[in-house]
Length: 581
Image (tube, rainbow, N blue to C red):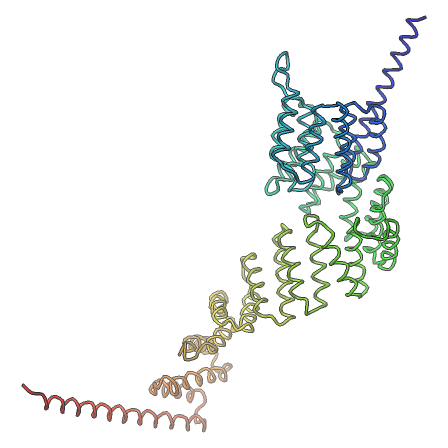
């Protein structure tokens, strides 16, 4: 009887521990979603409360407290308190050290000090003898990789995380989450590492075909590239392996909301169904109402959400952004401006999207006196957006704003920046930049652009026109005669159809004639040009009078020169005669 009782007790113990292990796995699995964090906390807290000195229970409960996309100071303090209590209570375990260092990274602490804790944890869990001598704990390496994968690009050391995760993968090649964290670390490195990230995520799915987070992450990489042919299958696979994973539906809602409001609503409904209840989820509904063109309803929903979180938007800056969108659409530019300014004040810079800055530009364009403020936002958008096409569009927007403000020099600067990024010049580009440069009174730039305009489009008249206009503006006592070559070049072009272009040729010749007669005093050239004009408009009374004046000037000049020459010769002779030997 005693033996039977002991057997039952052992069986009961095994069942309880099996249930705890299953619950632990469920809680960790919920942590893979940014929108099931509260569910994870509920599960992992129960395990923590029942096993307060179990290192895994402590570690994962602390991880749950810092779960989600936006980790607040309060969350970090709560997680730190859990880890510190464990250490105080004598649970001085390496996994807890890693948890503490993880919090240090999120708080922006000394990264070298955090790495020291990581290395101590590795050393403490590496056997010095036996079958696994010199092999670090995979659990510790994975936790270190997780810590460095967490947070924005400025949190942790993703390269260090990759190094540790590669060690873990070598020791435990069947651990799919090691590759998920590795992929996230590659994404944090930025630049050309997207391909390496996808490879890591794909390896995770090869190991575990039901790893929904890996499929979701692949989809997000391709979504950022707007590669629908790649992200749709990835998201489809994520839904197949776990139709309750809310993050996938939210990504599809965000994709469809500007394209197909019906598909957006379908995915939003599924997201709300499977995500934890949260005011943030109601925010997505308000966002959908905006996308559906129901601006008043969206505003009403926003105000309801604001009341539910205490009347302040400080904890949910996205409300201010959506307020700005709604008010802009409703024509209330003042309210839109106030809300977009508050949004930029509350939202961390690394969370602000280029589209947010674009909205600010649209709002500020309603206030011409605030054009410079709008340009600041464009600058920020250019810095955050990786798309060359988008950068060019932002620069063009800045140029348009400066044009409305009649700040032509700034408009020219922005157009030249956009053109430098674009590389190739269309005829419109040459025309527009020549024109703006002329308005900005940057005549050397006009001539530079016009010269290239003529070279690229020699059969178009505008390049010659701008070249002449700028050259005339520069034809002063500082640059005498600079307009003459430009005028001659334009005349050569116009002479291809002298009948059609007669009036313009005469105007150009007239300027040249005036220059040679009045300023250069080269009457022979002036007379020659006058004759060219008369060849175009024979017997023109005014030109005949002008010709007589030039002839008289030429004769008078010859007389003056002869008189001066005779005077010089007489003085020279007198000087020679008076010389004593």
